[in-house]
Each structure stands twice: as structure tokens, then as C-alpha cells.
Length: 88
Picture 1: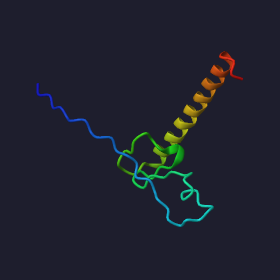
Picture 2 (picture 1 turned 60 degrees about the horizontal axis):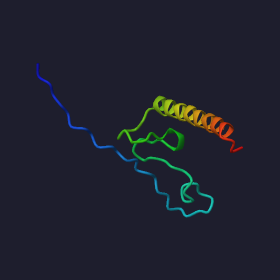
Picture 3 (picture 1 turned 30 degrees about the horizontal axis):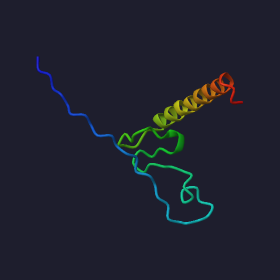
């Protein structure tokens, strides 16, 4: 039996869109919005690392829904700890 070992792949960083319109109402210029020009994901769709290719609409939707659940779980945990430890 031959075993082929592949070296670990380096993590891919997102390549964030940089807007140069300098408009005071631009969410990108003001630093509030994030969008990866490689995977085409933005904000709640962004994974911890870039897959290195454009995500499908289904993948973006699944990522967003997973992030929504994670935010909900984090909020519930925060509320429990706040109640338990008397910081309310």
C-alpha cells in the first residue's frame, strides 16, 4: 500500500476590495464593509479563510446562515453569563 502525503496548504487570506471613491457615505471607504474580490463573499458570508475561488450562491447562503446561527449562539451565551455573574 502506497500512502501519499500532501503538504499542508497555506491559509489563504481574503483579498479585500479597496474603494477609492472617498465619499463620506461610502461603506467601503469608511471602513465598515468587507468584500473579498477572490471568493466574492461579503460581510456575514466571509469564512475565516478564503477558499481561493468564487463561492457559489448556495455556498454564500449557507455561510451566511451559519454565521447568523453563530451570532445568535454567542448572544445567548453572553446573556447567560451576564445573568449568572451578575453583570447586568
